Image 1 (cartoon, rainbow, N blue to C red):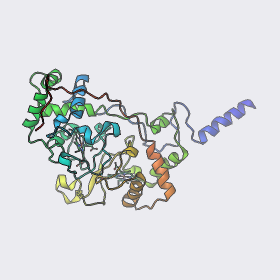
Image 2: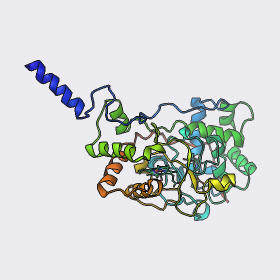
Image 3: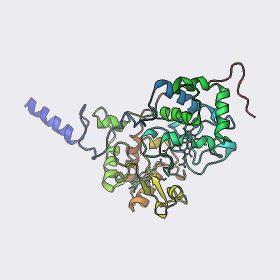
Image 4: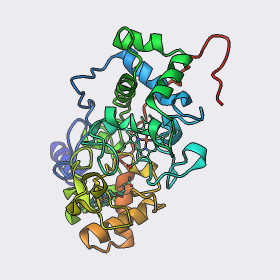
Length: 330
Ligand code: HEC
Ligand code: HEC
């Protein structure tokens, strides 16, 4: 009798979809899974501790900008989930850029960088902002390199890349290596998948809903993006067409990951949408021609919130500076 009730209890636990320690709950739709713990590393830029430390200094150092005021962290603030929560970022002389800043967290997982994928790798991406007149606005690579030299970076580069290695390319390599460390593991959803934790019933309804209605045809796999470009007929931005020049790429954008999406408002490439519920509603309408009920939207948002992981703990670096005096910004 005692045995029987215990057996029924276990059966009940399984049927109700509760997490059993160490096992993947049966209700999780196929394809969804735990955020990988390692990112692909390009053969010509292996990881090392000294390199990621240098990359961290460069990421935070406003010496990368002409004004001496703007760092990568200004727009991809590591304290606010790798974004600035601005519709369009503020750059040089308070100018606004043309697009919303996506998060630098988990960026090593994307098939290509930027909303339109115009930079194949993080190494290419990192060379963009310093020369962009509305971002860091440096006059030339040479000007930037001489400033980094004046700041005292040359010996730090030499330690990582060998003799006389202070260069624009190596700057980008170090920053990219640092970015590959910015992973956000252990989201409530990840713990649920591993049978180490639970998520709310609303979140579970949302999890099933996104699979049922087809959101996960694009936002698929453990990254919740299939890393392809898809048409998004919304707003005035040409998207990938501006990169390839091809009419068939009009309004194509890289499918954004859902990882940490609850923390990276406002939404879409133009930052035009303030709340996650509104973004979900629009996606359903534009991509799936589906009008979601308020409770479906609430469930989906509850699910998306379970994808907020643990932010990397980053110790704020001290930058090299010439002994005895600070850099002089004209
Ligand atoms: C003035 C704000 C600003 C600064 C400074 C800035 N970024 Fe960005 N970043 C953006 C915006 C806006 C985008 C999206 C632009 C686009 O897609 O056309 C972006 C895109 C990115 C992406 C692509 C992410 C993705 O999901 O595609 C990465 C990675 C990134 N930036 C890293 C950096 C690094 C590293 C630096 C410093 C060298 C930097 N950013 C400096 C605003 C900024
Ligand atoms: C046909 C592919 C496709 C489908 C289906 C799809 N999405 Fe998207 N999703 C995208 C693309 C592409 C983007 C990037 C949009 C942009 O450029 O602003 C995106 C962006 C988003 C964003 C904003 C991310 C951010 O950081 O700004 C959310 C939230 C989102 N989708 C949720 C959903 C939900 C929920 C569904 C189902 C109702 C869904 N998507 C269905 C392709 C798709």
